[in-house]
Length: 339
Image 1 (cartoon, helix red, strand yellow):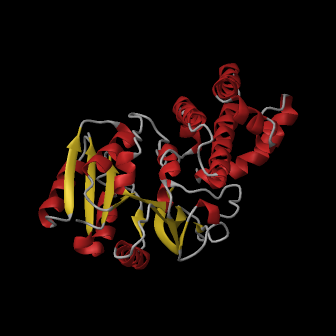
Image 2 (image 1 turned 180 degrees about the vertical axis):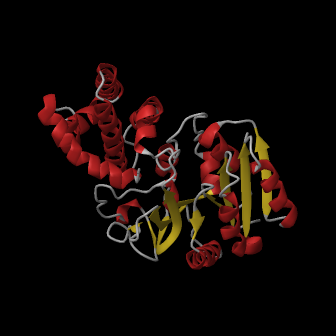
């Protein structure tokens, strides 16, 4: 069995997918590289087939009709044979030294007596034009270089959350937890780092900068203008998270519940901010409807979020309220890393 399966969702990725694939090859036979061609119309398919032919047993090319990022991740999970699973977007890459150290640690853990559910590493915002690259670390919130549970987790700062870039799940956990990401929808990575968490019992944090998260393409989904245009998809993801949170019925660890509630808080903030920035009557109505949706589906969390610091500032009336929301915008920028 492979140690680690890494899915690379690719849609018209011919210009940058080679770098993503090449950075994973030093993992050798320990890794399975799943290049998921999501109905591309450029040379993505032929590049995927080329690497599968050059590296049989390591690279697998999987071709499907277009299903969006979530559909490609679903396909990656369904086809993964490795003990652990990670997603690498086709325009991002891994730092080789950190990558090798993570594989070595996973190998050690697999040989031990305790099953690991979730490996966590740092990631780097590799933003175009920025000489200083911001690193998202977790050493203030998580024990370093040791196995731990939710009881051992400390305080997460605002803007300091687990993103898809920072997590490596046990593959069997992902397959058994029942998560299915919605197809043809952006921002589903938020669901990927939300829904499986109640099934995670054991974690390990390595303070290494593994994932390089590229930001700067004009057509990127985290481009601010594009996020505003796609706000309905952001709202859809937001509502799915609300429904899932309500369905857990507080059967989870109190520290995990607090973390998930704070995550939902920042998602409500992001959706509200972009609807405020849109400023149209329709957008402001959508913001009101989103908060009503939370109230109708989870009244307890509604009151905790609506009258918390972020919820209050997101719902203050008039120009004064919108000025305050600009301050929260900076928190959202840090969370999403949009350009």
